[in-house]
Length: 526
Image (cartoon, rainbow, N blue to C red):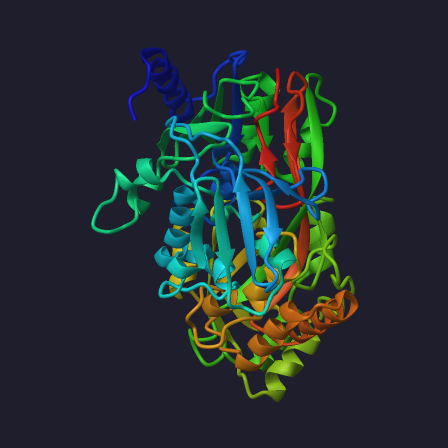
């Protein structure tokens, strides 16, 4: 993308700063928000593919969906690109009236763009595609499911036995972002639906667009002049700063306006610093250990799953390592979601773990390859696990790596054990249940598939839960699923997080919600 000369100069300065040593105290530009965090996890800024924290956090700023979750109360769904909607009498369709809106290119948002966006997301079948698959949409039938009514109306129909309310929840997920068909189509290559281009570019109607992106260095967003709700600041620069200590120094010195992903030590060091305020934002993030059941017979043995649950120092990690940044949580639904279990039946008990292993004929010692993000707090948590697993004769061979590479290995099954977190894609219990309790035949990209865990019976139970129309019965079904997976599965749920965010006291109106995509820059002022 060609940038105006002053933008080019700004970008060059940013990249020099990102690559060079920490500068002496320097104020950030008045029209620019500078954010220091790790962006090493980013693999694609295509909303049909991006499924990592950095990319998901960008999508509400780059794109709009037909509907969106309310910023303050995610249980409420409100209009976005759709001015209104009407449910069909069949209970399996919605017709949306489009509001007047324009993409960053200046092109108007049309029914054709909605059709293109949703059908391409299903046909590309990237990691988040399973969300739209919940409607029964597949590559072979989605063209007939999303249709134009007239120049201002588009109809969505589905075959799955779910109601309009659940369908609306799905449409708040980042994968349902609407992209500019004309801009994307001009960048098709080898029938990729523009996916290669959208990995590093944007084509949305959000408050910002991508001005430039260099992997592992910086993401630069510029204000979308055509946005219906123009942002307060002209630019947002998200710098890749892998070292948490460096992030803290940047915000402390004024070289960054916001620092994310700080360790407990860094947060403690900032609490009494003038000019800096520290937030602890409640998060729906659930942290868990992921085991690859296909890697070897031991990792596929339910007795090992059970033993591993007693080899985690849950309280020690939460209290001593993270010091309030996370709390012990041992089920797949986070607190704040209907039906979330809050009991914590597992405690560190190496002797019990050894007995479970011995009774199952699993002989120790043995070694497990343990891949983790080369970032905090993951390395510290990995070292804690290494110590406690060793008490049962199990050596965890910690192999740190760049987050994008660790993600890729996890999704391709090239791992034995790894640390993961899951953040719901939409505010409904099924968002997490569909990830951990659906995998009938390895055809859908879920966490269960990454674990190599084929579970046709649990899949049927999960699909029955999403169809249930009685709210109390539906919650009971999800609680039963949580108990089953809590007790025996290749997922060991450990924590629910709070996101520590350090801000310059000059930053006003920064907003971040419970879900990962609920990061908003448009109303930020300095």
